[in-house]
Image (cartoon, rainbow, N blue to C red; front, side):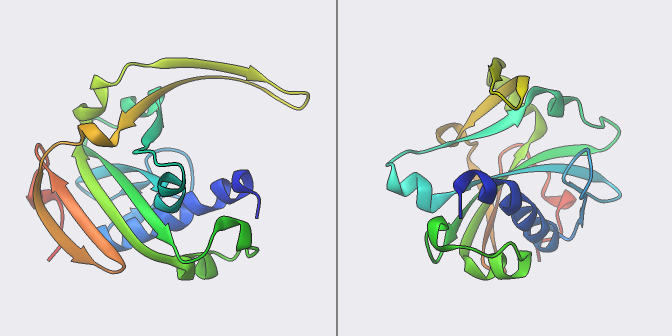
Length: 173
């Protein structure tokens, strides 16, 4: 499968997994990816296979406007990685259940909302024959993740709560 196309499908697969293991509701529309009565979570994932293949630690890309989501509830980032059993080039299905079947492991770091503010906004503009874009992104660095305060084994992976996260906001028992 083409990497660009795969990257349009896989985020929803990862977000649905995160919703399950965090006992939250997945939002398939606009706005924060996950929510419940007391919090919202915006999820971002990196493909660990790809990072390993280019020997790169990786950054999560966020839209700057996402930092303005719902201050009425507690807010967190879920920054994760996932590992696939086969290369993307050998994946031809668009079926989300089958795609989930290719995932062998995930790590998910829950980070306080304000942590993202340390990364400066970057303006990105571009144009092709088909489209034109203008976005402001922030690039969160894995190397700057806050210290882990607890680790929780979940289906197909581990959830790490980091410094600044209220553990009472998450039901991971």
